[in-house]
Amino acid sequence: MRMRRHGSESHESSHGIDLAPMLDFVLNLLIFFIITAIFVKEVGLDVNRPTSTQATNDDGMSINIQVLETGDVFFNGRLVDVRAVRANVEREKALDSNIGVTILAEKKAQTGVIMGVVDQVRLGGIYNITFTTSG
Image (cartoon, rainbow, N blue to C red; front, top):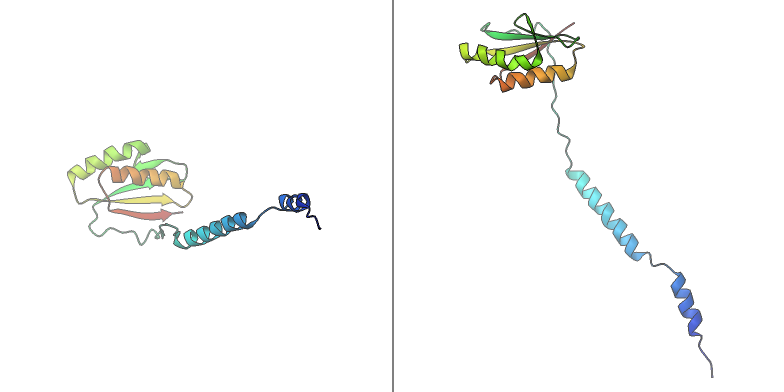
């Protein structure tokens, strides 16, 4: 009569690691990332800065805001703080509701200052904004 060794069989199976659940998990992650990567779209806004000769207003009624590379902001020729742009825009809009804004930004002006001016103009109620650059 032959005797089976139960101890050796159970000993061999206890050392082996079942990789099937881990491979299933990795495969599911791979499929998930492939599918989500297909639907990811980058949102952006292309801005083409026109030259100063292109930014002319036909009716001549426009608020001129100049942003220097030093961060100074001039509103119709007066030096103002960025936070004061909104109040000045609201005052000018009260005089003429169809008025537009021309923002003249120097080439090396800080983008954060320019966007701060744009935000203040929009908060002031004017959305007709023309951009131009100098220098």
